[in-house]
Length: 149
Image 1: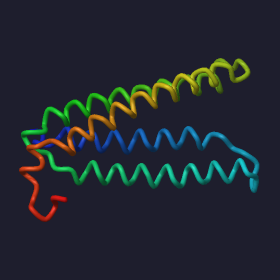
Image 2: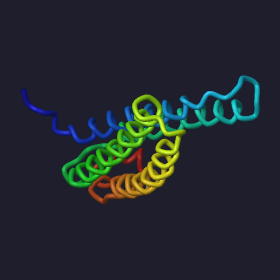
Image 3: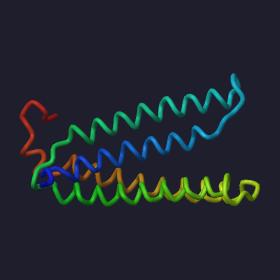
Image 4: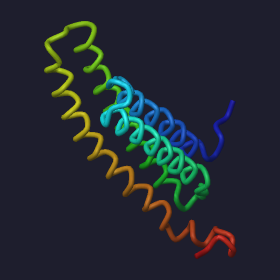
């Protein structure tokens, strides 16, 4: 069994899909009363967050993998792995606070705060790595003429 040449691109797409679903699933655990302003904002966040996640996934999957940008895809794969680890750590701490060692939500609040700070930081690193891939000169040379802006 051999790996496809563009396995980092496929793994990045898979990690993005799983991490976006986990992120939205964490927000789904907040269960406000129906037909309140809070439930409207939760629904709006889920709807727009899902749309944005899908859009970024399509951008990832339609960006070509060429030899000139393979090192950038591997860097993006590393950044996505760190993002996924931050999500899993945050979610694990929330579940520990809710089911295993409940302490009035203090651990969940602290883990959410630190987790979202970490997610913001990691997301900015992922965005920079993806922009480097999209603006890479070998990618521009390998792109078809119609796809160039």
